Length: 115
Length: 114
Image (cartoon, rainbow over all chains, first blue to last red; front, side):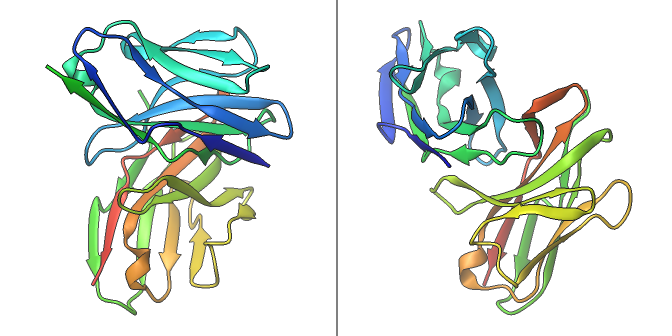
């Protein structure tokens, strides 16, 4: 079974400041990990994914995340926040198997950017 | 770029009515999913579907729900007798092609039960 904990349901950062959104996972098997972004009244867009290759993964819009097995973490970072980054961010986990595995999502973190 | 599409974007229905939510997955994908997101809450898995049968379903997916792939392109979610608590955003997703580790999500259908 898999689960995800996202610490901080709301995070506010100033424009230009570092963005850090935290995600810890639990998985009884090797995991694949994902970050999705959801803008208001829109669907889920994949930001980046870890699928057992490089532990530091880079995604769209300047975001990156590092898989740390010892800490069971997959925190999302961006060096410099932009107003357009304001959205809801979801971390998700699935078992690292072929194909037909469901995603288990965290409760989400709403990111607010302060001008 | 291929994408998952969903119709309608918004459906309003009366409690007790049947609704069918439609999805067109990416054409060469083989695995299909429905998720839902109640307003302000996390995205929850409902059901996965492969080779014309349900692979896995969650506790939410009770006898009121059913899924079907009636032809080679559509994937539908039916709610037989809607309840107020079924009001949510419903997302369809598919997996396949060259990227078996990534689920591609549709834009969602917002279901409002009155």
